[in-house]
Amino acid sequence: MSSDLPDYYFRVRENGAMVFRVDTENRQRRIEMDQIAVINIKNGEVKPHGNTKLTKDDKAEIDAWMQDRRALLAERDIDDILRSVDHLNLTSQWAQSKATPDQLEQITDTLLLAMHDLRSVLVRKKADRLLKGKK
Image (cartoon, rainbow, N blue to C red):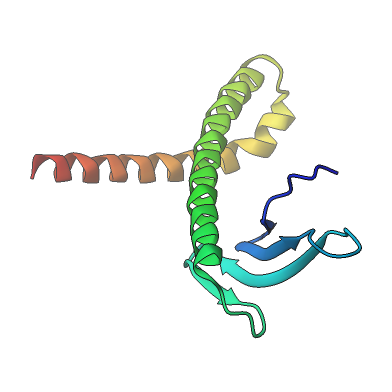
């Protein structure tokens, strides 16, 4: 393992992360990870673990990680949406060139409802943005 380990390790979980302080400065030269906090990325809550008192460095590192994590998750959201556009295009090609009548019967209503719902949301949001732009 590299001797240049970070001072903190963030174990990602569903709504945030568990934060560990990494320690290699011990007699056995083992890597020790002491949990110091739990982060909720959605509401920004940072709960110190047990009796841990977070230092300024701890808080700064956690804040930086949260900012980076939020940016990464936002980037992934956009990438997921762009992949959805690709999937819609592939679905159109499949429906036009490969789908059997039974397959089309199986997916048509569900797909049309989902597309109608998406279109309604997008049109409403676009109208809202246009109205706000005129004010």
